[in-house]
Image 1 (cartoon, rainbow, N blue to C red):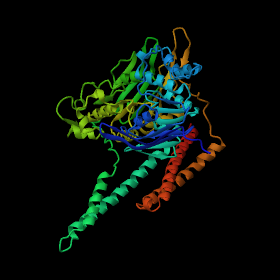
Image 2 (cartoon, rainbow, N blue to C red):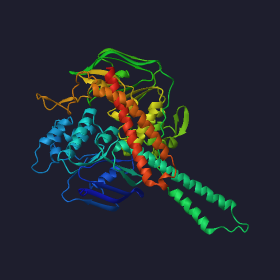
Image 3 (spheres, one colour):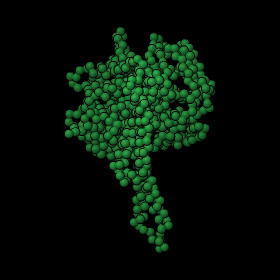
Image 4 (cartoon, one colour):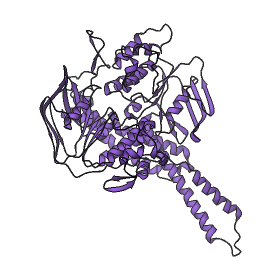
Length: 600
C-alpha cells in the first residue's frame, strides 16, 4: 500500500492586483518523491512553492500537511540578521541537540569556511549559505527554488550527487535542464494558472508539452472553422422572410465567447541579433599570455586563436578568473607578459554577468533608447520601443517601469534586448542564462545558432554549452587553460573528468580545503573492450530503428481527431514518442562517446 502524501495542495487560487495568477493548481508530494515544477517566468511557480511552504496564504483552496512532517524551503532572499557567521546561520536551521558536523560539511562543500560575515556576503555566497541551511536538517520535504543559481559547475555537480543521496521528497524549480533531468521523476507543469502532471521526469516533459500544444491548436482550429460556418449561414442561409433562427444565433454568440475565452499559451520571446559587417578572419589571438594578482596566477602561458564564426565556451569554478580572461581577450586588460592581437573591423557587444550596466533609476524604455525618444533601431530598421519590448515579453505598462523593480529574469531579458539591438559581429555573453525560463533559453539558443558573427560565452549551464559551443576552454588550475573541441559533454569525454573546484582557505595558517567534492580523477586512456566494440557496431541499427519508430508515432499523432476519438491511444502514443526521443538522444550520445574513445 502506497504511503499517504506528506503535503497536498488542492484547487489553489491566488490573485495579485486584480489579475488571477493561479486559478486551479494542485500539488501532491509523497515520501521520497522527486518532482520538478516547470512553467514560464511569471507563471506563479515561486508563488506556488511559497504557498506549499506556508509563507503565502492562497485566496482559495486547501492545504494539508501530515502531522510531524518537516519542510525546508530555499529562500531566494535569506534573512541573515542576528547571525555573526555563516556557520551560526546554518546551525540555526538544525533540530535541537543535532550535531554541527553536517552544517560544517555542507558549507565547506559549497566553498565556504563558516567564518564569513553574513552582512558582507555576495549574492552567490548568500545563496550557498541558504542552500546549506535548507539541506542541513535532512527534512522530509525539500522545496528548492532555483538552487543552482550562482553556483559554479563543481558545486552544481556536487549538489546533484548530494540530492541523489537524500531521503527527502523534493520539488525543484530550475532553468538547468541537465539538473532537472538528472533528479526529477515526475513533472508538474504550471501553465496559465493551472497545473498538469505527468509521472515522468523532465527529460520527457518537453515532448509531452509540445504534443499538448499541438492538440490544443487543432481544437482551436476546429472551433474557428465552426464559427466561419455559422457566420456563413447567418449571412446567406436566411429565409425569404428574413427571420433569424434565434437558437442558432445564440449558438454563434456562444462559440465566439468560447473562442475569446480559449486560454492561449503565454506569448513567446522573439529574438534576432543586429549584425554588423563581418570582422576579419582572425577575431582574437592570445600569444603565450600570463596574468597574476600578487601570488595568485589567473593565466599562465595561454595561446589561443578565436576565428570568425567560432563559438567559444569558457568554463571553470567561481574565482578561476573567467571574467579576467574575457577582459584580457577583449583588450580591456593588459597581460603581464605575452601579446593579445585583436582582429580588424571588430564591433563587440558585451553582456555582463553582474548586470552592472543597468542604472536602477532608469526606466525600461530609457535603457533601450538611451533616453532619446520612443524608438529603437534593430538591424538598421527603426521600431517603436513598445513593439520591441513585446518581443521580449514586456507589457506596454512596463515600458515606464524603473529597472529597480524588475525581477532577475526581467533584468536579464532587458539586457539581452539591449545587447541584441546593437550592431555587433562579436557577442561576449557572461552567464546569459541566469534567471531565464526554459522557453526563453530555447529561443536564445536558436538565435545564437543563426548568428553569423563570433560568440564568446561564459556559462555554468552544461546543456546550454552542449547546444551552443563549438569548443570549450577549461580552467585546469594554477592559471592553466585548455581548449577542447565540442560542447561540455564532449569535453568530459576527452578530458576524463569535469571542472575541478577551486580551493579556499579557512583561516590564516590553516590547511586549504576543497570548495566542492573533488571531481573524479582521469584514468589512463580507456580502450574499447569486447562489450563496447559490440555496442558500437549495433548502435547504428538501434538508432535507425528508433528514428523509424519516431516517424511512425508522429504520423499517428498527426491525426487531428485522435484525441477526441481515442484519448487513451493519444496519451499512449505521446508517452511512447517521448520515450523514443529520449532513447534516441541517449543512443546518439553513447555512439559519439564510443567513437571518440575508439579514435583516441
